[in-house]
Image 1 (cartoon, rainbow, N blue to C red):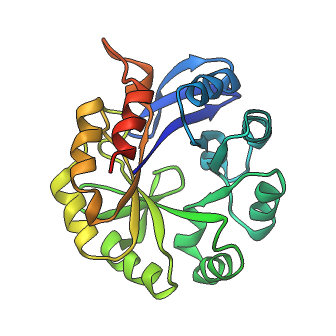
Image 2: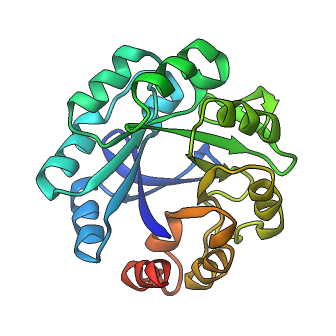
Amino acid sequence: MLVLPAIDIINGECVRLTKGDFRHKKTYSSDPFEVAKRWVYQGAEWIHIIDLDGARTGKMSNLSIASRIKNDLKVKVQYGGGIRNLNAVEKVLSEGIDRAILGTRVMEDKGFLESCSRNYSENIIISLDYDKNGMIYKNGWKKRALNNIFDFLKILESLEIKEIIVTDINRDGTMERPDIRFLKKLLMSTGINFIVAGGIADIEDIKQLKKIESYGISGVITGKALYEGKRPMDLAEAIKIGSER
């Protein structure tokens, strides 16, 4: 089970939001590259980068930062936020990014989803952001999509998609712990592997998710737990627990 540190970027700065609310923004560093360097030093194999400006506007704004992190630190990077057409996908991949994260547009355009899954299957990953009732949200969590997550998982299965990111938006940035019961329900409804995000508080959550890894958890994304609290989570320890057999 991979542990992926998250770097969210607004105006070139490393920030975190609470429940995706831009009014509740906290800045941790003016230099996301230095933050990424710290995570790589602690053993990160992947960095999860979200361009929050792009998620809000629909146009990528911080790709150059992600590209520098990828190419200078020699770490795997998945990048999302504002990737709304095939040209944007190609632009991201041309910068050396390992995986383009797709969200809003795949909810709105099945043709785009099918084209991306057919032509870029190894270099894209779908991200589903859901609420406590399983409804999917898009446009930086500002709008509710027509699908619930259970129905959309069936669509993704029909396209033979093997792995996705799932984020509980009611817990993301709250450090209130993942909803393990609902996660198990989701996992048992599909054969798709999940990279889980939302609510990670400390190393105990990594241990709890590790216990249900066999249900189909391939990774965990952690953000705020690494940046704040009385004792920020030790990424190296989390990676070690995730990699245990």
